[in-house]
Amino acid sequence: MSSVDQGRIGPLTAGDGVIQPIRLTRDGSQAVQEAHARFQEAVLRGNVYYLSVGAATPTAYTGGAAGTPLLAIHNPSNNNKVAVLLAIGISNRAAASAAGVVGFDTWAGVSAQPTGTQTKPTNAFTQQAAGSSMLGFVNTALTGSTALGLVLPVTSYYWATAASAFLAGNMFLPEGLVSAIPGNEITIGATAALTSATWDITIFWEEVPHTAAGG
Image (tube, one colour):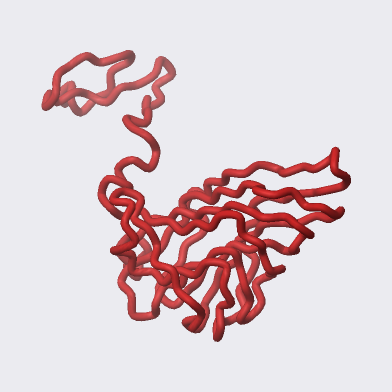
């Protein structure tokens, strides 16, 4: 067995193109690290897209048919791609003016294709609204859509008084737990519409080839 087939404990020093053994830690575990930013390769390959909305006044949404989420993507049934949710960002633009609580949740499932107003997703590499095979919807009624199931609560906001408001986190990485195969839909919505409150929200996803095996 050559040294290349074995592991070596400790740092390795070499130039580009040099074949090296796998690096190990002192307890025999394989040492790994991210060479670049987590989503850099997917973005640079042009496979990552996003939808966003600013200063949005939401409609209360709990996954119901023909509801109005803040953001939604629908994967057409004849598509050959899968949308894998990468990140969700939420921030409060204008505070509520009356007491209340709102949850921001992710909903998903099989759905008929909505006929609501569409917004083209933006490519995270080119920053152009082109190239995505998903249908995007921004704070508009998903006319004709099917009811979806709750998949992933993201964050919540509680307003008690002018001196006491609380937003639990504003950035979430689903880590591939939520995806939409052809014929499926993903939505992000506010469970309540608090008086005077407005929101900024963005979702990022990667589009990858669809296979029956899921790989």
